[in-house]
Image (cartoon, rainbow, N blue to C red; front, side):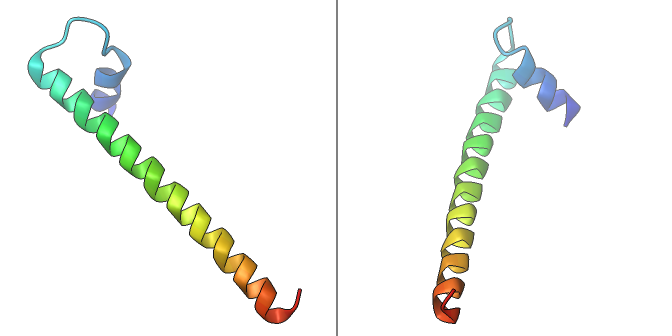
Length: 57
């Protein structure tokens, strides 16, 4: 994990094609995780709202 941090930290410097590919994959993974957690937060908020509506809060 630390190596991946270094790859992403120093992405602007001269890097090999393999390093650039790892950086690209990490960026895609980060975007995927951000979308996933945004969707989870939205669903959680919807569940809380629905529960409060069911109980008349």
